[in-house]
Image (cartoon, rainbow, N blue to C red; front, side, top):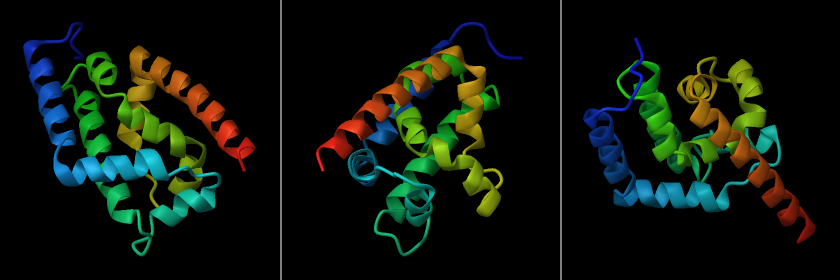
Length: 148
């Protein structure tokens, strides 16, 4: 059964997740995906999942990290709202690939991003954050297009 309020252990886990995000290779991977990965099509997304893509290692590290983190909420290890409130960066990445997830599941991996999807459907905080991020991303993509 899901806990109704966050615990001291939730806070400890959140701090540990924060520390792991600061690890050198993880930080570099996050910077690459947050700053250089702006998929405009399914093909753009699918390309990064290929081993020969220059951002593939960063993709695997970041996507695997967030899937692991959000799985802790899915399996009742962490309070879902608390985790989403303090770890929304994974939702930023998810918002970038969200339009292409269903096709990716059909073509490549039926279970891809199931933990991130779970938290966005089962946490009010995650759902609200995802909606806010999606609006922000849409505006950012429009601005990028207009600058070309």
